[in-house]
Image (cartoon, rainbow, N blue to C red):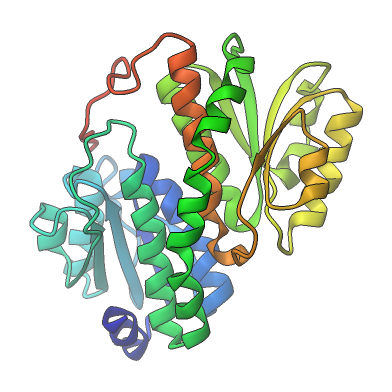
Length: 319
């Protein structure tokens, strides 16, 4: 909260967010969040401009945010360091407040999620989303926003209660080799994060799309039995997403639908129910959970070890 007020008073003209992997998906949520709730233009950084090409853009008037679970990735560090050299505001969001990223930034939000033991990060992703939501609420000084955030733990607990159900449903998909994951608006980020978890744990080729982009060509992929996971919680984009779900059903796609809405769930072969009452702007915190559980149980069903995905390490360093 205090960080949000300080940054609002300093009045940056726009926000530039540097992140990789799961943190990059959290950054995509931030792009929608701060645009819609705070009227702030948000862009995602291109770290190779800072490292490989050594041609960083002009960051005058920017708030530059580095998001990293470990706070150790060199290219994210270089974006924040260059921002500091240019006199821009800098903020680190990390699970390690003693990390190089935290030491490089003027302001730090420590996730305080405890040690992330999983190679495929889950709780730190959730913590990143909540940290961004709290920053947005502090920025706007809106008590209604804060009250809505306070109800998140109950909704998350309710979503986790579906673990056994998701485990049974996952068996149906143990032999798939490909799928697409679709979301829009705030949950565009959710589609990328769920697809990432499916890819890195189950080795299924899962491709994320905006429901709007999916109409522009990729829908040609869909024929009978093609697996499509759609994130469709209640909110302003749901009518658009429902239109796509109906078209996919007509094409006899194998539909998995994550939603709190009975109409949307009734269209799916595999309905994945969300708790009701979560505002759309906070729904990614909860909507990602059925996808995380699906990836976990599908990994087990396919005979793989979710704690040791092949070719991956806990901390990934990119330059």
